[in-house]
Length: 239
Image (cartoon, rainbow, N blue to C red; front, side, top):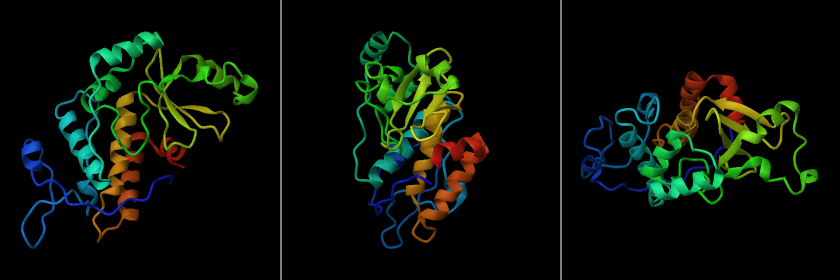
């Protein structure tokens, strides 16, 4: 599975109950001072599925909880939300609308760290334009690839290895560009909510309890992804 090795956990801000008062999520406590520690997953049932779709009740609270825990684990700070004006300026530049789930996510969490590399607004663009001026250096796209290529806008660099996730400008379905395997383009998700949900589940493999270990938590996360999206999708995405 293509993942980054987790860093050691750090002690979390003990005011999490004030930050997330409505969430019924178990937090572990130290034995010595009864102070709250960051989320450390010991059982599969502790892995959070943050929403069915972005916009659901408590979607932002659960998402913020995961993003905060993940950021603390890597000693990162939360990203700044993106303004409506900046989103509208990007849509004007691209001459297409972003999927609503992406716009809601950006407006609340910005280009948050979710285990995969979301592109900045200045990096997003039509992937067909990447090789427009020098097609001889681009992929030898299949017939199936060429049918959807003109409609794809990139928004994620996956793990920074040259692969990308894109949304379809007409249907807002999510496609995966894999530069290693032909056909290079595959539809993996019906909407941006599913992609972001998958990332938010996957990144929790870094939030493992030492007694359980990352390998087991990673396997549990993958089991949940398989249940949600099917093994074929997860295999294409993660391997």
